[in-house]
Image 1 (cartoon, rainbow, N blue to C red):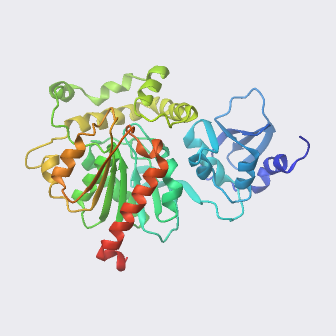
Image 2 (image 1 turned 90 degrees about the vertical axis):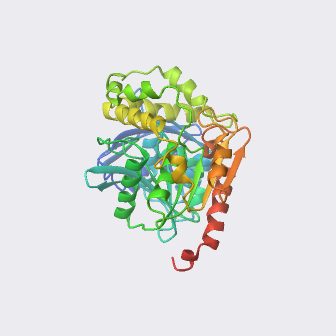
Image 3 (image 1 turned 180 degrees about the vertical axis):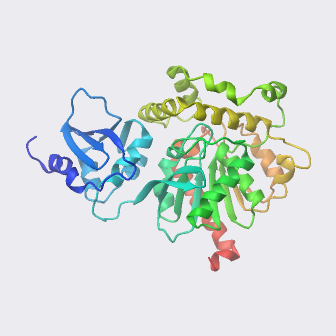
Length: 399
């Protein structure tokens, strides 16, 4: 292979190393065509070595052509990942840390930041992308997921919006505080994060549990939320046959459930999708992140508390979800998957009855995470909805 431009672009990475603010220690294994190199980060140092028997934290696989586009600043890793030109083995979370560690030319690639934001005693891991002066769009993940579940559509949305994708408290790389972990609790913490970042009026997209939080935020602070989009959003269940049992179960019991069979979790993950459009590498990388996070007792308790509160969400009555939703005036767009095994598409009819002015769609051959199964369609749908609402919103003229 010789001293080719490709090999030089890899081996000169230490010259462009900007340092790790988080004192990162990690081994990234690059598979660029036939070239295989380890990039070893240890706080303020960076070394490139030929791969040996050491186990990498992350493996990044792409073609020489794609790598050179990234190296020249014409393409970002997130864009390559979203267009299926780059695969990741191991932690998706850690793979996001790689690119910002190195200087590269500004030649049109998506620029993003991945950092931590301290708000009071809570620490949030936040991915931000897009023009800093563009309207802010907050993207909230589902139960057991992380910000990486939005990666397939971040590039398209970041062309128009300042995209803000946090790990919700209790999940991903964010802190795991004690708390109720219901929609009301999450909403106040997301608002606190946005206050810290200086964003008053926002757009929100939420998937699954994130969709429930988006609705709650619109009901709590309608003056701040200009529009919401729910992708297979959680809503309150009218039929709850296990209500008494769930009330008796305590999240603290999950403290002891540190071991989960990987194959069983993988099958549960597969059940979320219906189209067959999800690459095998994505399952493995997402599983690696989930299994790593699950080792934390606080993460397990956060997951269990959030799942319990989804089930206990009161559907009817004066303060019930559906009663309150009928009074929500925020423009809303809903997408349900016809083959969603968690949130049945029959909720589309109930949402339409509660919100006659909302745009509600049911997508065929779609499971629980539309932005992963159909990223281009989801991007077009969200961009179209938010653009229409911006044109009809009198606040947009003065924003």
